[in-house]
Image (tube, rainbow, N blue to C red; front, side, top):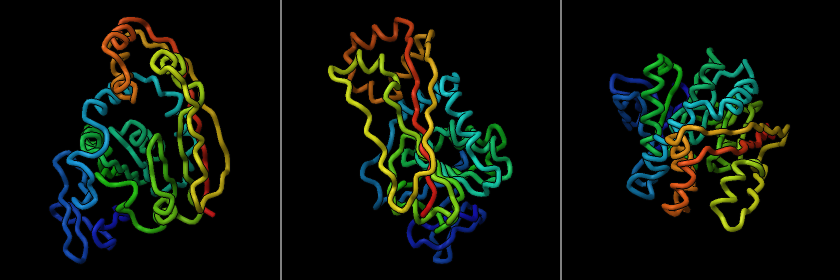
Length: 270
């Protein structure tokens, strides 16, 4: 946990009997599931910020079924084996974060998300498979990361927001930034059914202070035969807020055949 810093004063956090603390006696206890809450009350904009519990549980159910395996495998192969510290921003329930730990057995993996329900799920999963010694999960804001300056060799950001200055601050001088965003064909069939007008996904701008190295596309067919997994897909996406009960019922009742399309963009620090 050498890369964690105090969200109140920026001093290094050191492990103690209760959790972690800094020299100014700011203390953050370890939850029974194994994570740390490093989100000060003054940085919260709602009682429970981030994705709702039902969304995170649906995401876990859907991802554990293996539909995003092509993206997971692709990202695992991208990671430099020399990586010592990796930060996964917007880790959610930990599907990809756990995969990074599997691919980098000698690295420390840090997952942060503002949604406590997701971090709790991620930490419990890491503990159940014995990865909790290398997987450090924290409830935290991606706009004010409790992470030491220049400490990260790799930062991953999958469908999550962040602040360019914070990415730059915590990235090592020779580090890699990997951002995953939806491609134009991603779930296009469902989007056409749900929205009157299907708008193109916004292009991810180059983060300030970084240089574009490469951009890759990961595509795969998607066939969802189980109705409970079709429901999980709807619940884990913004689709859930746009669906009438009638259309939702129609989608859940019939086999979904669609396309997965991800844009993986790689940067390094200037």
